[in-house]
Amino acid sequence: MTATPTRAAIASVCAALLLGGLKAYAAWTTGSVAMLASLSDSVLDLIASLVTLAGVRIAAQPADANHRFGHGKAEALAALFQVVLISASATFIAVRAIERLTSGEVAADPEAGIIVSVIAIGVTLLLTAYQARAIAASGSIAIRTDRLHYQSDLLLNAGVIAALVLESVLRLRGADPVFGIGIALWLLWGAWHAAIDAIGQLMDREWPQEKRRAFIACAAAIPGFESLHDLRTRSSGSQDFAQFHIHVPATMSVAEAHDVVEALEARLEAEFPGTEILIHVDPEGQVDRPGEPLREANELRGA
Image (cartoon, rainbow, N blue to C red; front, side, top):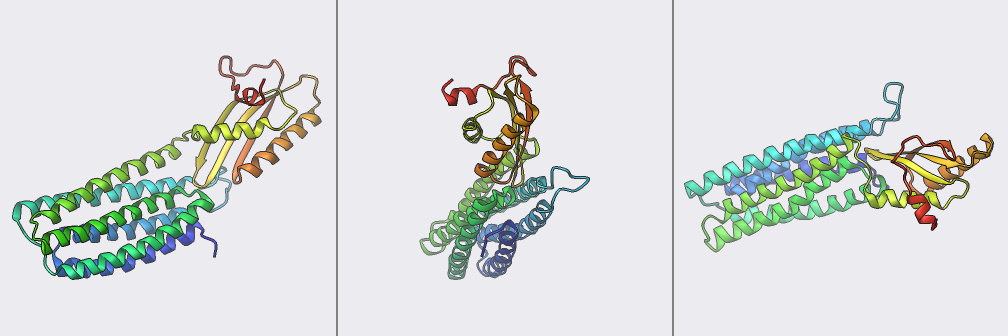
């Protein structure tokens, strides 16, 4: 079965429901702050996964009269919503852990918490593997952010096990809330990086330099134009956009220039599937943006 963003989001919702129920039982039984942190994270996972599901379904809708560039940025909005939830969860965990440190409470019945955490790790590994397939196929930023959250759950659940063993079995007082604080800091770190990616899409940030140069190298392999300049790129959900100008000989006919553009588009779309490409033709010697020519195409050709 093909791993699509929608299927990955549905799998995420199901996993969050299962883990939330198990962790609620374990948190009630043990009274562990680390387990409470894990439960809180799973509840927010469920909310975030529902938002992700809505985001990827909206983003998958084709362009219409009011959204000519599609609905891809719904994924970035869903990712930002997840960032807010992750940050709120981390703050709650840190506050509760500090309260436990000052009160000196100790977690009880560690066995239940350890068993639930082991099950959670197994379910999360299966989910993140499926999400990785969906990301590889679509590049979905919403699923990528959701996967980042669930990857942090692996560390979180391992932390819960360590905290319960250290505090309840080895009698190392304070281990549980200390691990809770560490988990909170890890969640905030992940939220920060997820926010950077989502905001980058909303602000139409350029592609990474490696991807831009690969795009230019692909274009440079096509003969018929003199140079390429004014390349602009952006991403919207799993949809990429690129536009640029090419210089062709001033004596070239419109039909010949059209053939060059068609060849360029066919090659680039084959190498960068899912990319919407817009090419503007300039006669040799025409300068649209003095001081801003893009010379990489000529450099790659060895000119």
